[in-house]
Image (cartoon, rainbow over all chains, first blue to last red; front, top):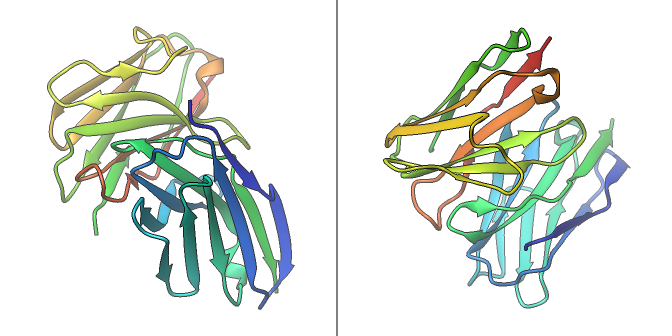
Length: 111
Length: 115
């Protein structure tokens, strides 16, 4: 059974800082891994999808890396902004859309 | 981009009544949709996999007779919480993907409160 751990559980930084969110998973036989953000009381917004054959994906100020063999992924956020404040969830997908979620990292970016 | 619509966004019902939640894929067909539940300050827990034209697959510990899932078309899955009780109060979210290696898209969720 896939288990996902996200570190840190919470993070508070001043605006402008670069930061790294960590995700580890126990079953490395994944199709892909997806990073999401969730705002309070809302659904999930997809940020990045990394296929199992890829090492990283970039979108704007976000960069996600994947080391499938070691069961790790990181989400790098450059030049953080208050609007980045949210909970970030990592979800490795081992079975055609059936994803397992970590508990998330709650990020607060202070102006 | 692919969009998943979920309705209603919130509902309050009395204990013992049933509530139906709809999940639609707006611009793609989805043979499979997924239903999750999220309790406050917890992560998403998969409840069941909804399969178009066949029975849903439920995760261990999820009562199939309580959480009825119907996936009658390639763009619509419904979750009915039957005989709801206060402990069923939660945030229910659906997801779908056009194909197995595409991004998973989520609805905006339904906040269910059972009084």
